[in-house]
Length: 190
Image (cartoon, rainbow, N blue to C red; front, side):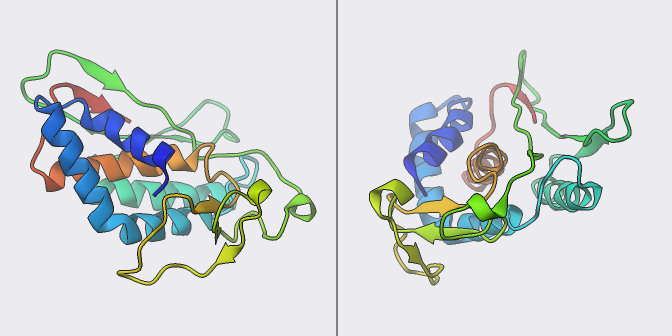
């Protein structure tokens, strides 16, 4: 996984009392689970997320809600008065001793795009490139389980960075902390 993604995951890890241990645990978790994380990320990126496409938005809501349920975040939908606005998906991780609450936000909806303006791939058909496109990165096949994932590889798809990467980073951070039996010192709301 690339450095930006790791930094985002580590942000949540810093909310535990033993931050140094948490960082090591999170790094180990990401390394040991990077194929699963990448696969889930690619699945999410494959779902069109244009805000005005109610069918695509409903599929994104179902995917993210299911992912949050698997992580014990008790998701619920918060709907705007405007029936055309995509719902917010709200979840939380309560920490019994917490005196503070931190809210993280990431959106999953996006703006329309013109597939004809995409270079070498299509918006909702994620590809992995050996490097950034402007540096001549070539399309690679999805890495097989056990194959090393180079941190210089890049995932290209609509919303791969803004902002489905944020959604995936939060989910992976929760997984990493729970797998290490670490709890945050604050309540987390997503």
